[in-house]
Image (cartoon, rainbow, N blue to C red; front, side):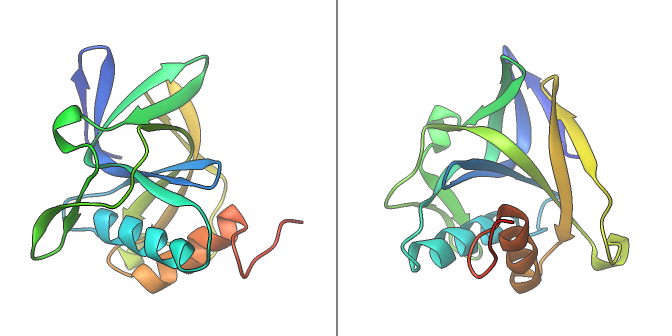
Amino acid sequence: MSAVVQAGPATNVHGTAVLVADKGVLITGPSGSGKSTLALALIDRLGTRGRFCRLVADDQVFASGHGGRLVCHAPDTISGLAEVCGIGPQRLAASEDGAVIDLIVRLVPDTELPRLQEEAHETVAGCVVPRIDLPARNVVCALQILAAWLKLPPFRAE
């Protein structure tokens, strides 16, 4: 389960949020599990293929429920910044102010991943959101699974 702390009207989630086309993705996991690295790899992969993908928030994500949907945005102090391993926070060329979250990605050790995942959900800020578990610190495998789940190239919608 992700680390969650109440922050006034919003819930402060230790995670990273990205907007992939019209899908919001909240990446959670322990410190050092590769949340920022996965988000930056996703932004790079889709950007080089002419697809839309932007950072919403990195390290801290303010989450709140609106009409039964989970909405996330960055705290003002870190808006537009992403942590680059070994360098620290860096400003990205572009970012989004917020996103409605359609999927929660939980980064877990390989040993905790089943071969085939059953349907799972997680509740954040009172909103129930579909969740998939991806391997921590394994960007190549995590990108493949995430691309398949979101029906991104080379995968296609049914």
